[in-house]
Image (cartoon, rainbow, N blue to C red; front, side, top):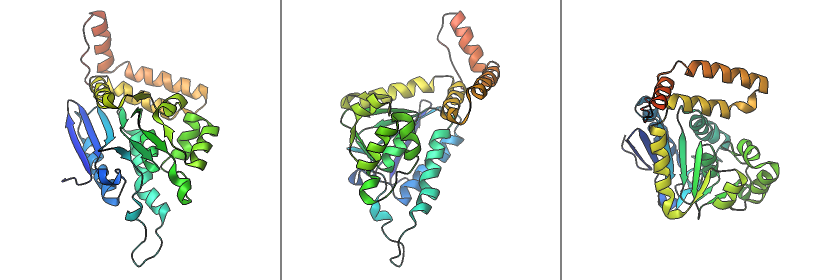
Length: 263
């Protein structure tokens, strides 16, 4: 597929997806949604890919929805925003959170509205020191979508979630790291290097174990402690028979670097 709104490349066991509408702060259009979906389709069909990087081109990560792309429907009628969420944003969030591999997000600039929600849906989020996160929905009379109303109170607590959602005040990358919204705040000129180091680590890691770890943690709120303990037991039993576990133990015992295959 000839992409117009994103850049997509694969190498060294990693995929890199860059939102590429820098003149519009990488805001989403229907075309961008379709191209991101096509890239993720390709990613899931390629067994050699074991991690994904999501980032933005230019000075912003993603400003959320391009309002000019859905201002009115044909004939001048109002657009059904619920349909947009149901068909475009919710499937994207579900997909990012359930991909069987670590998803790294490098927030290189402003992440606003659904752009911030998409960043928070990734597994490891690093942000340039100059980046900001903005829940801008309140400024146009809407509610946080793309999972933001679910993830914000769980990551930052109710008080901070309400503050972000009701005021639309920007939260700096430093604050976001301090609040537990992201993994790390990085100096601007070191962001890409840090992202690539994470990709290299995950591309060489025991992917199956990482995928099960991701699933365990992301679904933990739906279970009791007893149920979680039982599930941990089941996954330990399953992974104990994997090739990667045997390779990891053998490498440790023989004091060599392991060569994991993700199986």
